[in-house]
Length: 45
Length: 500
Image (cartoon, rainbow over all chains, first blue to last red; front, top):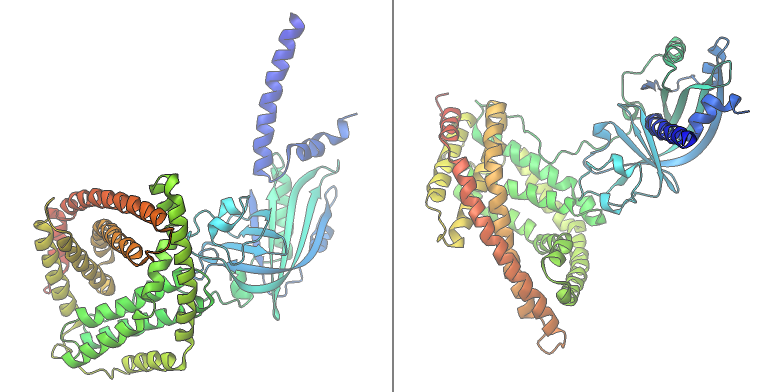
C-alpha cells in the first residue's frame, strides 16, 4: 500500500514537472528533451 | 526574452567575432550555418512588413521573423501566390491569422539569406543563451538581424551576452527593408488627401480625383496578373469615388463637363462590372453551399462551374482591355487634365472647400434622416435602396473632407454611419443576388436535362436569401434608431455648421 501511495505521489509530481517543462520549452522554442539533455545531460549516469 | 539588433549595411559583425569576445568560462558553439535563396513575401498593401513581420519563403520552407519581438517561426510549405486559407496550418500560419483573407501573398524581393545559429555555453557546456544571425543580401545591399534569446534561469549570462554584442556593434535605427533599399510600394487605398479649407473647392475636387485615379491605376497590374480579387475591388472603389466627386460636388464643374466626365468614368468601369459580380459569387461559394441542403448541391456545382468558366473568359477580356493602348491613353489624358486643372469650371468653383463641404454634408445628412425616418416594415425595397445610396454618398463626402474637420469627431460619425451602411449593403447584396440567380435560371438552356437540378438548388437558395433579407431589414430599422440619436444629430450640426 505504501509503495502504491509513493508511486502515485511521484507520478503526480512528474506530471506537474512535465507540464512546467512544456511551458518553458514553448517559451524558449525548444523541446522538453532538449532542456533535460542540456540541464541534466552530464548527470544522467 | 529576446533582444533583436538590426545591424547596419555591410556590418562586419559575425558570430565568430562574438565568440572570440567572450571571456572564460563562456564559449560560443555555432550549430548551424546555411545559405539559401529566399523570397520576401507580403500582400500588395504591405500588411506584414508594416506590422514588422518578415515572411520568407525558401524552396520548401516558410520562415517568419517578427522584428519587433525577435521571435522566429518556421514550418514546411509555400505561400507565394496564396491567400491565408491556402497556407498549410503550422507555426508560421498561426502567427499571421490577422492577414486579410482576400489578399494573396506576392514576392516583394528575392534575396540571399545566410542563417547562422549558435549556443552560448558555460563551463559545464550547458546552453545558457541562443543566438540567431540572419544576413540578407539584396542586389548590392546587405543588412543583418541578430536575435539573442535568453533561457530561463540564466539571466546574468544573458546580460553578459547583451554587453558583448553592444561592445561590438551598434543597433541600426533604420529598418532592415530601408537599409536593403527594398520598396514595399506604400500602397494605401484610403489616403487622406491633404486639403486646404480656404482653397477653392475646384482645387480640392481635382486633388481628390487625381489621388483616386492614381490608386485605381496602381491596381491595374494586379488585375491583369489576376493575383487576387482585391485588386479589381480597389480599382472599382477608387473609380467609383472619382464618379462620386463628379456628381456630388454640384456646381464645381460646368454642367456639360459634369455630364461628359460622368459618362467617361462610367465607361471605364463598365468593362469590369460583371467580372466583379462573378468574383463576389465565387468568394461566397462556401456560404451558398451552407445555405441549402446537401441534396441540392449538384445544382450549385453546375451553377458555380458555369460562373468559373464565365469568369475565366471575362478576365481575358478585361486583361486585354486594360493592356490596350487606347485605354491607357484615355485614362492618362483624364488624369493629366485633372492635375492641370483643365476641366471646365462651374458656378460654385470658387467657394471655399470648408464652406462647400459643410453645406454638402449637412444637406445629405438631412436627406438621409428624412428618408430613414419614414422607413417601416411595409416600406418597399426600392426606398431602402434609395436610403443606401444616400448613406453611401454621405459617407463618401465625409471621407473626402475628413482632413478639414476635427479627426476624432468625424471618425465617430463615420463609424456610426458605417454600421448602418453595413446592414444596407447586405440588404442590397441579398436583393441583387436573388435577382441574378433568377436570371441565371431564366437563361439556362431549357433543353438541358440538368435544368431540374439547377432549378431545385436555385429555388432553395432564393428562398433562403429572401428570408435573410427580411431579417436584415429589421436590423436596418434598429440601427437607424441608433444613428438617429440626439447626440449624433447635435454632433452633425456642430461639426458642419459653416460658421464653425
